[in-house]
Image (tube, rainbow, N blue to C red; front, side):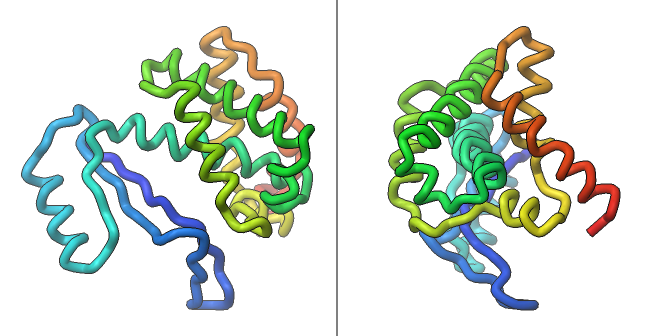
Length: 191
């Protein structure tokens, strides 16, 4: 089985116009079992031919969790605070919330057997510190505009896995349950 992810920061500027910012988009993919297969090589050839920045992962589960660590640590917190990334990372209290959210995500990942640790947390925040001050995340924008979001798949996933695994996730719990009424309303109205 092949899995993958895209590293991208973008937003819809207008119908049919997508703005990519902060860094060049990249597609990362690989076999779940870490094998170097012919089909993965063929996918790479197709992406290379199309001119897409891409890379075959040596450990796609780890790469997926590193992206998840980044996006799930900041997205819902942005929706909750209604703040751009720069405000959250520069405010001492809010930055601590982001770090605590990320540490809970790492605990869950480790319990699930993912090779992720405090060094990944450090690298994640090195990226957060370099991204444009006024950046907002898609989950945040969707929630602020009353649209369904990825809340269930991000912080909701961590909360559910924490419950299943017996790991306390108080920061993710608060963020998730504080935003859940807005998410349910958006899904009921079908915006």
